[in-house]
Structures are given as C-alpha cells and as structure tokens.
Image (cartoon, rainbow, N blue to C red; front, side, top):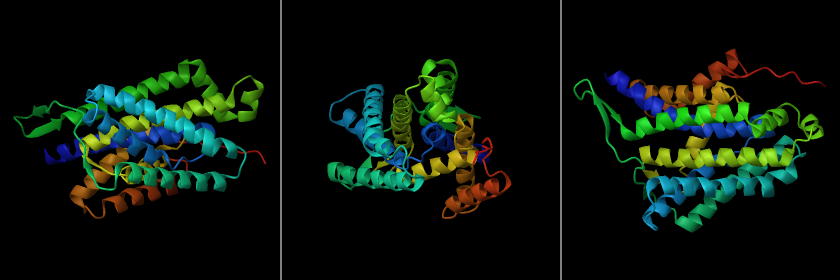
Length: 293
C-alpha cells in the first residue's frame, strides 16, 4: 500500500511536469528554440493567482483564468521583444537571451513581490478520497492535477491535428520557408505557440504551488529544469512524449526519494535520463530528423 501511495504521488508530480513540458516541447517543435524563461512564467502565474485571490477575493477558477491571461500576454510579449528579433540569429544567441529573460523575470519578481516565501493556499478545496478502509488516501489536488493533465493533453492534441492554426503549427515545424510560401503567417503562428505554452505554465504554477505550498521568485526554476528534462526524456518536439516523459520523471523522482535517498533523488532522475539518451538519443518518442547539407 505504501508503494501504491508513492506511485500516485509520483503520477501527480509527473502530471505537473508534463503540463510544463508541453510548453517546452511546443516551442522547440515549432520555433526550434529552447525557452529557458518558461520556468519563470510558472512563478509569475502562481503569484498572479495568489494575489487575485488574497487581494481581490476572486474565486479559485477566476484567479487561475486571470493568471492564464496574464501569462499569455507575458509569453507573447517576451517572444515579440526578446526572441522575434533573433529569428535568424545563431542558436547560441537565442539561448543566451532566454537565460537573460529568465534572470530578468526572477529579479523583477523579487522587486515586485519580495524575496520572502509565501504560503500558497490550495486551489482545491475537497479532501480527496480514501480507499481500502482509509489505508490509501488520494488527495484532491492529486485528482485534479492528473485530470487536468489528461484534459490538456487531449485538447492540445485535437487542437494541433484538427484546427487550421494547428495545421499551420505543424507546417511551420516542418519547414518555415515552405509554410510561408503557402500563405502561413510564421510570426503569428510562433506567437500563438508561446501564448499556449505560457497559459499552460500558469495552470501548472497554480497546481504545483497547491501541492507544494511555498511561493517565491525562484519557485519555477527547478520544476522548469525538470520539466525540460521530461521533454527531452520523452522526445522534445513530441506532445505525447512530453506527457509520458513528465509522468515517468515524477514517478522516478518520488520512488528514488522514498527508496534510495531524498538527497540523491535528483541525481537518480538525471542518471536515468543519461541512460535513456545513450540508448535512444532522440528520447522515448522522438523521431530522428535527417538534415540536408
């Protein structure tokens, strides 16, 4: 029963990683860039939700909606100001810019909200369910997080495969030049990708802080890194891979912390990643891409 409890906790944590990883994998799959500021958008979303509830008394669902809107605008603004001018720049320049944006958001949050940790109230009010005469407890936040991950995954898959914008995203992912010749607005498509990824980051920030109720300007850094690891693990650029990678990463982290060492749980996660990449360099569900030179 203890193992089952650890497994459920791992799936809950992995679901948060999966939601964050979807933002990473969409941006990389379409714009071919790594947005390392994505983790800090998580932190901004959590702060917006917290103050929308505590200062203005908005209900939880409304605070999450406000956080998603603010993060959507933030994501599009970051793309327009920081990344769009570097569309044809070398990858290293874009990577350095992304790191710079990350530090800017962290320091701006520290100036705006202070550096002291804030206790984040849970966004889920019901206690959850008890199974096997109370021996196994599944918390409300765990249930909501897993369901949110599944719903987002299905909605995103349908959006990518069934809508005009989704087809445009797939076209830009394959070949920006050819997509532009066929009438696809590449800049608008990439901006939409950032908007969706940032909205998902806001939702993930609220769920993460509800499960681990400590909020500060560096809140999104480590989850962001682990979610990026999950995206690489599953195959960066693959939406199903991001979900599978996130779930596996969460389970490995929780089981490693429980059965090996709390201090070594992160090392176990990255060790597994190294092994997977040695065996399958493109990740579990990644596809090998042949480039013409």
